[in-house]
Length: 475
Ligand code: SF4
Image (cartoon, rainbow, N blue to C red; front, side, top):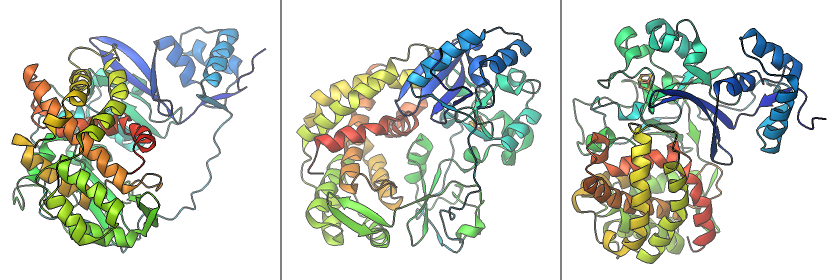
């Protein structure tokens, strides 16, 4: 007798992704709550894809039979029980209520871009071959299929290229990745959808990347995610007339932007340091007053700023002093932070189904070595940024202007999140050394800090902040 749901539905935190790895097609299920991944065969995926909350085991068996596959109701019930034990399925359809939540940003909120920043894309396609999900809304997928129907035959069978972005919800999809690359990325680094149908045919996330939008209660801050080498090289050229702005020309207020954009909002009260809350408007003013302080060394400056927030709260003079004239950073605490991060990096590097050409595999392997060495060599690495000084200066500026050291649930203090960023900058210094020794020639390795950031966000490694919070209580 089955104890699992009668009409199973794959839950939204289960992310099914279609890959081709070294020529082999496969489906990987990521559990974004447990941060684990499971490789499943095509036949199993067909069964899972029928779990949308409307079918019982007999209905799923009939669905599979209609698709030319066979699975008995007994097999299906056993699979459902297993998935239920792992918290991956629920019972019945999701009830979609009309949203009554207010928009994340008031329409009249002024748009405030990172001053002087505009983007020059280097065209190497790094951002199209690194992330685990490239989101396509239904209209985006329709455009891409019309523009390039021959890509993995998606014109005839969309399921060869698109799987649900979340669970079994069909409203948005994620694209097939071929050795980590978006299926629509041509060999030379160009987007095939763009080439065939123009930039407006690309999915919204691709059109707006690398922009991040955060409403801080005063303005809508727009900054580039520091996750791509182009962002750092562009950031070094302030007021570049040849670069592209992150928002359309003429966009002055939130209402001028695409209403489908994802906008994050700061909580009304922000946790500045343990036990210290401040209204988001005060944090907005503080950020504006400190972001342009010249930070000579991201590791030292971010550690000092973290300490200053604990000691002095949002005191602007103290924060600017910390950024511009930081003392030597606490290498032991940094080493400990890197040790907490290490198991998550190693788990990513251990995804042995990835092919040797997969940039994620190459990066995770190098990063796994970097986190091991950075624990040992923290004191040496903390000595200074060396050739990465300009990149680190931009990094600090971008983080502070874009409110990256805040989380919307206000569960982690800014002081802790700044310390986390200092640890990332330290790891990036070691990654540069590892990449040089291993002769990794991919242009993405020219800016290791971007790779560290992209890996942390893209592959859920940010979750190590929970361990950091338990370990580093003074932050
Ligand atoms: S759709 Fe185009 S721009 Fe978007 S990830 Fe794929 S190749 Fe890159």
